[in-house]
Image (cartoon, rainbow, N blue to C red; front, side, top):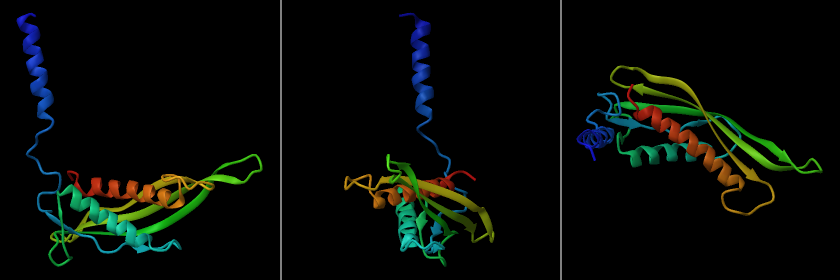
Length: 166
């Protein structure tokens, strides 16, 4: 193997390794903690606000970039409301009966800096969706699973918005 080729290999390993280590914060420098009050539920689907709020908090805790605190002690407040819940037919059988449905949940969220008394980001409309089949008991394809998938997509997006560099 030539000396040039070996040097390139070492350089490639070094360069690719740099992407895994960073000293920069994933959040605004003054934001170390966040409060997440219960989201408002403007839909007729019961308990969505509880599930969405709990999943957001779970994601923040698991990510460990920000600590979750009460509003008095938090640097930022994440507020939101569930503005839409749709359960629409997606596919049909030969008799034109719905076989598959698509659940679509839409949330509007805002992250406020308490110190600056202004939004860091605001009125983000975030959608999540999931599908289920009418005639199945198979896990992963039921109504509850479709709602869980929609909420997972929403909470993942909110986590990304909350801990990214602003």
